[in-house]
Image 1 (cartoon, one colour):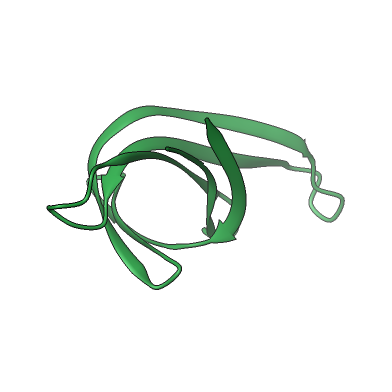
Image 2 (cartoon, one colour; image 1 turned 90 degrees about the horizontal axis):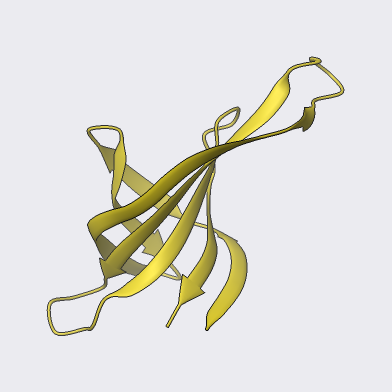
Length: 89
């Protein structure tokens, strides 16, 4: 089962991939990237260029003794802002 959040997160990237993120004040370490894709959205009214979002489905954990879960991170390529889009328990 998954839950949709759409909440801002701070993400640290290493070698072009998410390595860590902070969500609701808690630090998560990315253990592995499960999937990555890019979605082009409608043209932006101000620039006439498409808006691209990068999606990263990752397995992450907030600590060694905490079981990992699956998280979907989304990055707006135009602004560089990240969101936690979805979590699977």
